[in-house]
Length: 473
Image (cartoon, rainbow, N blue to C red; front, side, top):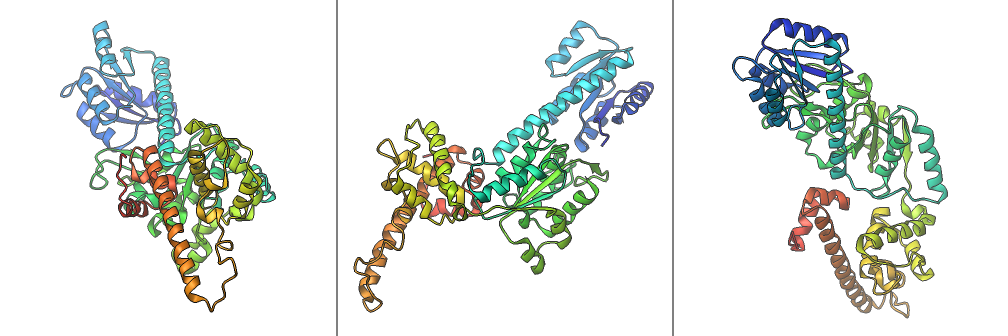
């Protein structure tokens, strides 16, 4: 696609089509021509356009009727009517049907150039708004990055160093360590900050749909492709795309992704014309990609293209100095969300338990624990009783008070069973509560709730059935 944008001219007069094509092509636009409204609608269904210049008076489907059909296909279509009969009634009719403007023949060249430029700007702004809405629906906002530990200070310095560059970045670390937050920080501190940041969770998109999401498709490219779809790489043009769970993408998509990195271009499904894009790729994974390369499940050449700048996020258990500021941050957040007023001063006993816990779910698990504690706290501060059993009663403390030896197997077994049941019940109640909250926040949308909880959608569905959680309650 031409850098300035794409324009579709629909006019039954050959000389008018030629004039507009010559004028707009000289300005740097990609221009396609259609002689009838039917031809124009067919082209619009197969390719993406920023602006449509549509003649009012044409044989077959007239301009006003074609306008309605364009807007049915794409509610945000920018359609400018061109007419030799620019009466007040014609202009009003066009506006009422959703036209973006009306130009009278004969027109001045500069008038057409300014009208098309304004239409392209309008289209791009709307795409950015759609991108933001899509990003909000696909991702979980976790607030600002919190970290005072030496390990996180190293990460912050690295972000400052790599942000201005275009090089690909590979962020690794356990689930819940904040990989998307780091990716956003890189984008927001880069020269691309004014453009889109598009997050994609590869594991949440079925493999057969992933390429369509990333690269887009034409109408009829496959069953169910009833209209042109712009791919996320094209949406992110000029900005950054964040490919989370990159290790989950299938081999055929890996090959196409490698081409995007190497050639800076891609071809939508069903199309034959490559599209050039300027996108910075930031990828993330919680698996060992080197091991995946050795096992043959991940391309070695793609790995080295992605890992130009590797950033490894430490687990929370390796940066315990961050526990206190994180807890205080989440107390503030969930005080506001739940109209609570708990103190941000954390009692030494509670802080000691939180810092001693291993946090297998990392920052995401800590946030869930604090949210629950803020909701159930009976008084003005967090107490030991607000914490889950596995945190307030570490395994070393949940043993026989007299140090039962291996010979007292019956007593040990009885204690283990008792504590196991208590532990299971506590975890079960906690998990049900967290799942319900996630479903409430996403209006019962299980896929979005799964992303919120950091788990696979299939796993969430299984837990909903196991716990008999009634949606909407």
